[in-house]
Length: 130
Picture (spheres, rainbow, N blue to C red):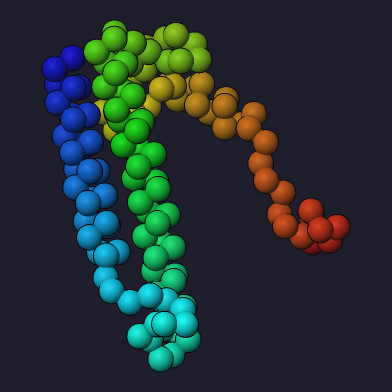
C-alpha cells in the first residue's frame, strides 16, 4: 500500500509540475486581435493554435490529476485496486502502468465496446459513406 501511495503521489507531483510549466509558458504579453503586436494574421493564427494545443494539454493533465487524487482517496479508503464494474482485483501490472485506473482490462474492453461511437460528420449531414 505504501509503495502504491508513493507512486501515485510521485505521479501527481509530476503532473502538477507540468501544469505549472504550461501556465508559465502561456503568460506571455501580447493580445491576439485588433491590438495585437503581430502584424501578420498568420502569426496570430499560429499563436491561437498554440494556445488551443496548450489548453487541450492542460485540460487532459487536470483530468488525470483529478483521477490520481481519486485513486489516493480509494487507496486510503480501502477500495484501491478493485474493479468498479466486477469487484474483482485489478492486476498489479495494470495498476503500475496506470495507477488511476478503476476497471480491470476485461471490464474496460467491454465498456469500450458498448460505448456508442461518433458517426463521421458526412454521415450526419446526409452524405453517403464511400
